[in-house]
Image (cartoon, rainbow, N blue to C red):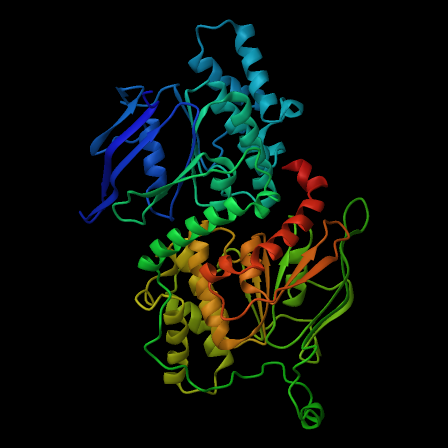
Length: 559
């Protein structure tokens, strides 16, 4: 049987302002059968969007051909419906009218009643029948993306093209929409091509996974058949031996590709043996009495509460949060959106007032922010007009004023080397990618030699494969410093890879600790070795099961 779509030697290059040419696609060959679900998996910048845009007819390849039912693709048409990463809705139109625009444009031969019925059917198919009259501003991010999917489906395309439609959403909303896409696949039996950077998303949804090699001149390196029975429940497949084997195989292959282009670096300078200035020293009498450093109960959260005033009265976001941490321990904090993870972190940083209870760090109650508590946020928060070196030096100058200038320079360069920015130290933050900026944020945090490192979803804005690289950076630098650390994350694998304990929070309001998982895996940890460890999937299942138990509440409905 002839494939519905054929790509043969598809190549595309772009010319830069300076005249340099970047080869994005280096010869893509792929055949897609009718009714098949293909996931295209690749690194950031590998040309995934260029590839899907070429299939959609929005980008003309420089070489090769794209055939739809044997005929060359020469431009966009209603036979290919495309859903972008961003929703691109008209804010002044309702859900119904946003979808009707597409229907009226491509189905002019149908009666008004038929077109209205088609709009209603597709909006209901994506679970938004109750929101037909709402405007985009009244919808959550997940609901807006559903409108975009409904609009594409309403064109009744032969092929549905999805360009990372879920990457900007939180984990719970993303899971809800993955379920929605799987239901649409079952109901519509449509050919679907999904561009994604999430291995689990590809394995849950696709019949085959095509992996792109890294830039430049990306091509399809390998294609994996997903021989896992449908329906695929994200908790149940975790126990499936075939799923585990395939997941390990894909992760291992991606790891081998990533290793070829990894930027985790050694340092050309030695880290100076200098102690940072204590900007909040305890009283002299205390210092004289304290003969030994605190090792046990180094960080204590005691009956921690956070209450916000609202027009409807006080709202308790976090209640009775109790946790003890030893010096040098790494804890991951995980839970659904809105469960108060970031609230706990900002209180620990001294950035958010504590309503009840307290937090004690190294025998001192936390009541103010300071460089002894370094924070890496989801957005890097750099000074865009400064270079990487200058951004890191800002903090170093503050906490090492007693060190010679040469040693302060060595501290800055050591950590920038460690995070793989040795060749980009003098590049402006405004000229860097998101991944590079986040590396600067990590280097800046470690360079402060903090008592406590707080990481608030530092890789949440990055694609999954760039996350792996920066997780490796974090693991490598943490192994050297053993700083006491808390990391807020939505990523189950990330939580297990990095932590000594995974602390799971119940849904808000009145969120608290629901369960604590001890991660008894040897350090230093390696992702590939971790996937082979017999305890890994057991730990993963415990966290997934907990999250599934709390997969409800207002935030779940809003998704």
